[in-house]
Image 1 (cartoon, one colour):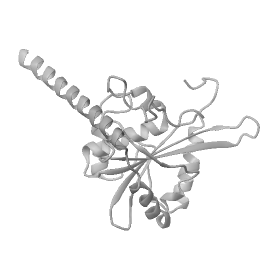
Image 2 (spheres, helix red, strand yellow):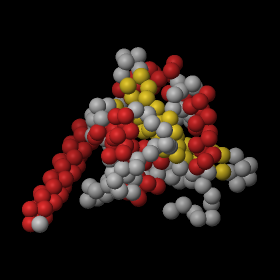
Image 3 (cartoon, one colour):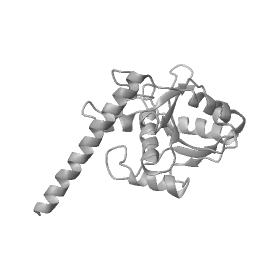
Image 4 (cartoon, one colour):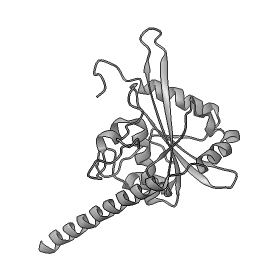
Length: 227
């Protein structure tokens, strides 16, 4: 839990990163702005970060195209505390699900990368896009200098990795999104791979989740029939 005596620097983080995006001449959209109808609808229909219906609003978002004319939604989430970049499970994977394979809403709402990956899964579930880039940024103010320090997590979220998210690389800014850098970035993304063991574990997790959804639907249908 973030120290209640420490003030969040999220507005500063947003200003720093949005300034970068602007300097790269990127057409980014802020929280309340529309990206396109398909993505807007997906974010609205997917369960929110707290488990409610809809209302998913990434702090910044954009849609970039590579040299092969493929589009990639980029979803960015900001936080304002030193330790709120990403939360992993015991296997070193981003922990967006509990041991019962249910959404881990506390992590999703508290950590930048976890939240961004949650948004990315909304895109995978409800749109035709199959590859999404989820970016989390958080930071803190140094006690002595008052300087804002920040860290960035960049993850590839796709159908091929079952929406889990794989870290692309370590970055100190978002210049990899610049037009003249983006193709090289996507090349790195496409070189990512899962081990066979990871694939089997993810398949099993997905199977269990599908069974839970099916049981929920059956239970709901049964209750409706009784009424």
